[in-house]
Length: 120
Image (cartoon, rainbow, N blue to C red; front, side, top):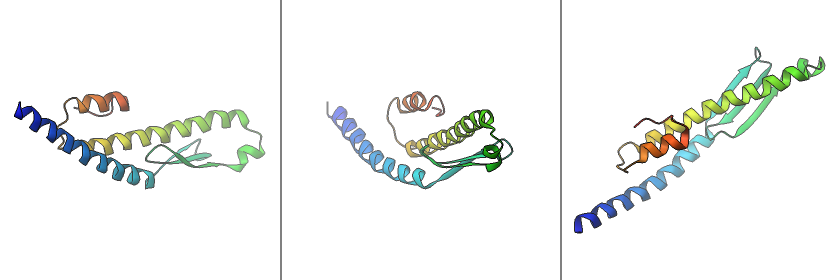
């Protein structure tokens, strides 16, 4: 019985430590910048490590030439590319955060949350 209480206390301590570390990781990810460029640089997108889009640049020639159909293809492609990079960066940060913590099932939960990027 006392062993179970000790294990529970240990898990609670680890959870408290992880909460503080998660805030630090989130702040660091928010300050990181990732970018994607498609269409030979005609569309560029920047996002932070949390996947928040921070900048979108479109070559003015696309607008001047009325290349709206091309824009409709390039913008989602660039956004999807930078969001994939941000997701991967987030997975890496979370994996680093959980190293050394012994939460049963934690790696499996991270895999489900991140779409399989974290490995047990």
